[in-house]
Image 1 (cartoon, rainbow, N blue to C red):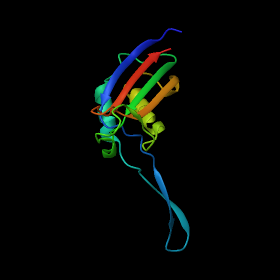
Image 2 (image 1 turned 90 degrees about the vertical axis):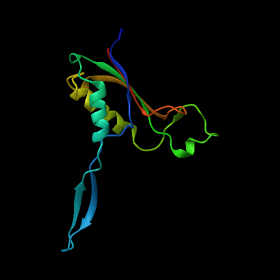
Image 3 (image 1 turned 180 degrees about the horizontal axis):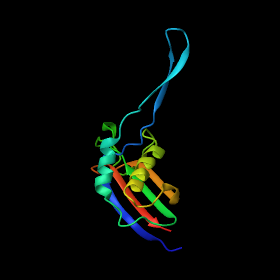
Image 4 (image 1 turned 90 degrees about the horizontal axis):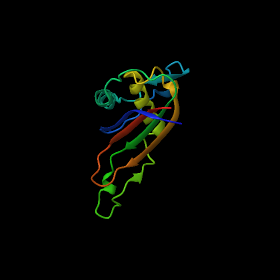
Length: 145
């Protein structure tokens, strides 16, 4: 099957996931129990970088698309030592990869790369620490199937 690349771009910045609402159990003065819902943080700065760097699509793609997202997250100080491996290392901590993907797909929808993210028929996502000296960000590739 032939694929046409719609966008293939590196977006520098510190990737953040879509914030999820948080809940907690509360006991009221009268002894009844309830649930309090509060926002789970903000990814507005990362969303603004994505919107700016990805730009607007020339026209929305019709039909199925394939998306490849390669996230590069900042190395912790413990991996910045001279003895640390200088190659890319798998990232198995927060943020969750599904939250990272959701935010990028939301921005791609907002910028008009497709009409709805239900058009994503293939999705490949990875997250890792970059090579020593590498910068954090995400490599975004969208192809028409």
